[in-house]
Length: 138
Length: 138
Length: 138
Image 1 (spheres, chains in turn cyan, blue, yellow):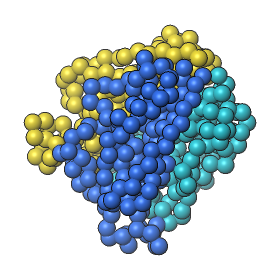
Image 2: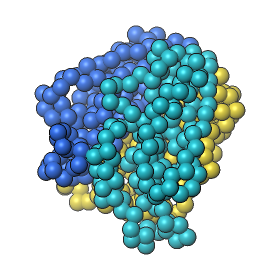
Image 3: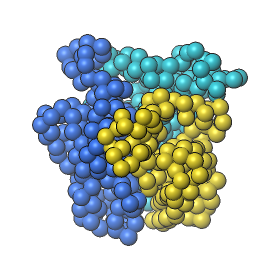
């Protein structure tokens, strides 16, 4: 069994942003030399997300509006977590969007449907944060 | 290490429907001949879901009502994604329900609790769509 | 390839509670003797969750309030699932919080960011319920 590990680092200038990381994950799968296996991609921080959806700017706007409706950032005082912090909403948003994806590797490539793209979802940016890529297989 | 891959195809006649695919996934695990490992089951389309919950028709009705409350289909114009498309709500619903499940394989079988059943959740049907089953182990 | 399996049992006295199980999962990874691999941790019951977030009591209070807003327990009669049962809300809450996490194992340890902690989320307690830990790797 082969295994492979890599961290991707992000320092998003805004509080919230969605970043397509599909190409970077594909490059890791290539480096891993795994032909058949599984690729785990997870946020290493609890106010961020890794998820798979469409790379369409209208939809990304809809996600922003929708997440703000379901788990609004403000007023900060509505959350007990927001004593010295202000990011409780980011912890909630990440539960809806998810921490991780597991993607099949087949023939040395991410085994994807036609529109699947992997995103890093930052919900509390303006600091350095990481995504972990772990590949196992043969 | 063994690996196994299969696609399940669906063409749901309605816009939204939940389909129990546990039997089909079990059959794949049998075909894979893997005794100890992991089974990934994921929607290959970004307006559909694979999730584990109860096979109870009342609950499935509750999911429909609840998802329509959290991410309503209409009015279509409320979503920027809905320019030439009308399925933004399906992309949101799938984030709540999830893209994938990873199930342990023990003794050659899905290692499940008493009521766990795997569902394909279609949120934008009336077209051919796929689920991927990938098994790795020994 | 090595594999390892263990069940954790819980009997939560309240209807809802979040329990940090990181130490128990770490002990399992140690017992498994897997140095590089994947660790699946999933609820075996469909009204409970396993998720990764912050171990901060204010945030846990916020989760309780937020989940009650998105998927309120009462009135029980609002859910068709609640004929002989009263736990439809628990099935919905678990979809938001998720069934499972998959964690990378690197160097024989859970490969975590600085604040990641694994929780068992009970949404319909007062009965014996289980979490499954399955490790594969080398």
